[in-house]
Length: 297
Image (cartoon, rainbow, N blue to C red):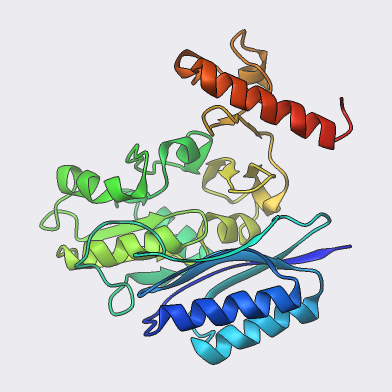
């Protein structure tokens, strides 16, 4: 069976989160839809899968009726195996956590640029600050050439980076990007609220750029971390070369696996010194269970 997968988000005012949550749970159960959706006053965000295109279309039509598809970032893909075990529809304070109550992406956000427009702007403005709004484990394996890495461990650290390193009086024009678009859309709203004049962000994120811009032209250097079993993607959205360390969550390559500290399913050189006996037991049990499921042991 080939599963249809939809990654989506939209910043929009949702007046009755509880009612939308209840109806989505009911419809997803009937349609055999799995995945995770977050609902907040500011919008909806998540990834879901369905066993048929028709089932997925039914859920998307419902969302269109409730909140509209206009300005929704919606990207489809497929999977041979079901990507998610359960369906979770959760209520949150924010669909992407920035912890800045005065920021409202439903009323104010930066200027969208298509991948081609983004590409041309970066070439034409080599001195403009171009900020990677992702976290350190993501930026470690790839980013745009000459981009600024805030070295954040969580997205809510981004405002502190801006306050210490940028100034709206000097940086009139700023560009930013992230994996799929949601973080830089909210970050752009924050920067406009802080007095920055021109704030641009990449529509569809890095993934859209890697899909649209040929590798021989590309300003992207490395691979793009993704939050699923593929771990990383390259140009043309081809499978990348990285794996995943279950001890710390960092992406790992063949060099990391060759290090003496690496234990498959347990730890790598980044986290071996922080590995407690309790965590080692839990990771060992998990790894053994996964090996059994995969027919290795």
